[in-house]
Amino acid sequence: MDIIFLVIGIFFLVKGADLFVDGASSIASNIKIPTIIVGLTIVAFGTSAPEAAVSVTAALAGSNEIAISNVVGSNIFNLMMVVGAAAMIMKMHVQTSIIKEEFPILIVASLLLVVFCLTGSSISRIEALIFLLCIIAYVIRCVMTALKDRDNLEVEPAKYNTIMAVLLGVLGMAGIVLGADFVVDGASSIAKALGVSETMIGLTIVSIGTSLPEFVTSVVAARKGEVDLALGNVIGSNLFNILFILGLSGTIIPIPFASSMNIDIFIMLGCTLFVYLIAKTRKSFGFASGLVMVLFNIAYLVFVCIRA
Image 1 (tube, one colour):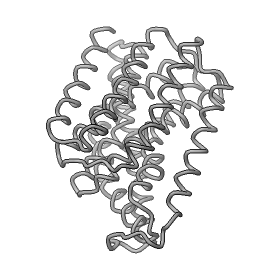
Image 2 (image 1 turned 180 degrees about the horizontal axis):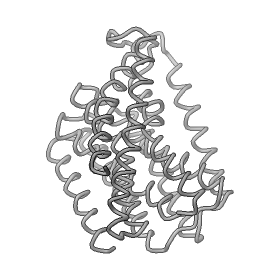
Image 3 (image 1 turned 90 degrees about the vertical axis):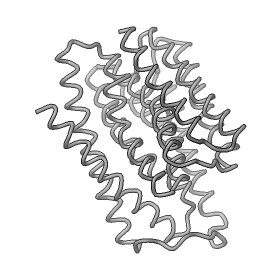
């Protein structure tokens, strides 16, 4: 049954992501909002829903290792595997605004997480509230940017009207969330039957399972030529993972974490800086850089398994 859940979950993820990309792109065209803004907010928040559900549930259940390792593992997977796979499908040119504005914000958020983890044995409620205030400020900034000079924005004709686009978006997100739930449940049951630790489950199976929406959405977006949506989805999702998910989870109950997680948090920060440097120096992600990123993610997963 667990294997069946995995298969059903992947099907819902793929079909849901396909519908969601079409819906989000059409909404952006209909209301004259840049696709990159949609990717950084609506798509990012929607595809982060599985991580939010898992981390908040884990925090309430006292499974704190899963709560934080899920976020750290998901961010590494998003940066290396998701961006890498999308770049291998289609060359991804990086907008100047991403390099100058969005990436630096993600780096600051990642640094905040490193500081909070190094200065205590948990993410306190005050630190969690700081995260929440940061994500609120970020969303407001994105909305203001989208509204600015909207009338002068040139967009491609929408594939669907607004009502149909919203319907497709809702159906797609339902498929993504439902699919991710099936995948995580099935994979977690298999892992627990093998006697694997919560940290390893969080960094590998759970983080990969909850990142499948980002993976499928970005790959589908890249295949359709919506590279702005693919890259914006990853950056926005990683921001939501740190600021919203840990902020919400930590506000409900402080999140303690094991010192062994420090190396994974630094790896997450290193991956963020690595992807930023490629974007800044090359202004694009091609097949070669994408392959390096995918191979690094595979090596990291092997490292986690060996360490466990």
